Image 1 (cartoon, rainbow, N blue to C red):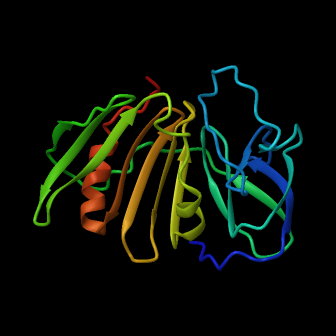
Image 2: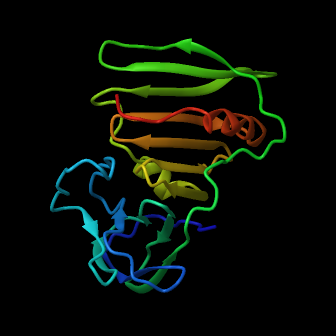
Length: 219
């Protein structure tokens, strides 16, 4: 777990190398949430990365200068790492391959209901469960401008707990605990996203089992 401090007023230089668990350098790993907008599209789309986007080179090296309190290093097929930023640093980052795509921790899958939530420029469905606090659920939608495909900078920078997977499809599956003790989770790719926010741990664990069953894909 990484506990974040307030953003520094001075820029920090973070450099290093990203490797897999066998020590092999990982090329084209993303260094995101540096203060530039994150746009995450499927790997199979031939879209050129913008000049502001930071990636590792053929030897796994990277270098960013930023004033933000945390960055995320991610690559399809691996467990991402959130890195605290409070001073200049030279790092060796090891990304572990994803072992399981399920976040469900319950032995029995909770029953859920759905409700249409379409709008003019997107399609959406609310997947919800009945709880003592009333219906609680996940909104899942897709459309040309529905999502840029990554968790918000605010969640990356301020969550007191943060975990993330980036699937081979490019979908980012991020979750965490906010400073107020509530839980959130987002699964996203450009143009599509499923998400819940502001939940207790008990309800979040039930919603995780529902979210695992929701497909995330561009319309």
